[in-house]
Length: 405
Image (cartoon, rainbow, N blue to C red):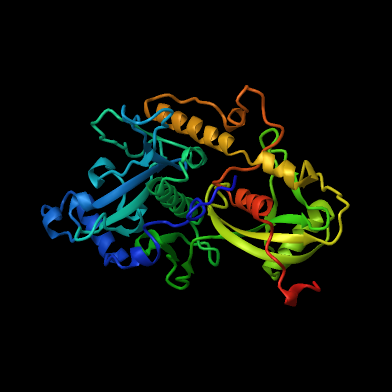
């Protein structure tokens, strides 16, 4: 069964794009309003601000983890209803002692027609000696700082609001981690200071003043196809959980096109020569290492010109050709649904104070309790949709202009 999403996970951010841009809240105006709210010496902060206190919403992060809430599902919900998580937005008063320049503007959004737009911010409160964050929920639901990967797997991909929250959290983490790593100017070494409400940085050296932009690391990810034998090439890395297989992927090098990167990476990692390369889609991926806070995964189908595999053991643990039928069996909807429900319950328990839960490696089991022979990444990853599209729909035809590549 193919799973079709409105957009990839971490895409379709409701605070960005055409619909968000129609909301007339500039970053500078939003920053001025927030500064007045945070400054205790401003006696008339609420009256003077174009954004009253309840219209400035803060999302705290601690060590790359956003603050989330997970109320229990209503008693009227049909079983086995899993609890839905949401981002725990706080008013500025609940994030005391944070310098105004530490906040990063995420965008503005009006909840409905005729309503004022709220300005949304993110802030890193990781310093143990720093400010205390008060969730102030007051409703018994609780909140917790939850790893973004856990939230990703716990997200119901049919829930538009949850997918929107995941995209916002991914955007926020990417910006905050970039701020944590880009503290100095790469040209002269002087301190870099936030500008444009934290969406850019600038060198503080008056003789330099270099503008610094958020980092994006482009990655090609490709499903290599043996058209003659109706097979696809999947690989394993040593860091993968047991029995998981996925697409090949690699970073783009300076001076090469996306198509060239697909061919080079496939050859280097498996010894397979690739001819035609066809674009599928792209996905922001803000759950990589802190040094690369926002990768952009650019997905392709790639047709093999050779079939003999020579695995680079420094890059991969294994790579094998898999038949279409075997891959269809690995795309078991019930197993992804089970993983989502298990992680949703884990988030719910964390928000109630529990710290431990099942790992994703324990989530992929068949009904009788035995592990499935193999599985591929879930619907939250572009790899899933590359593999699923080929398994159930077939790869697109190669344009005639590329047929001789």
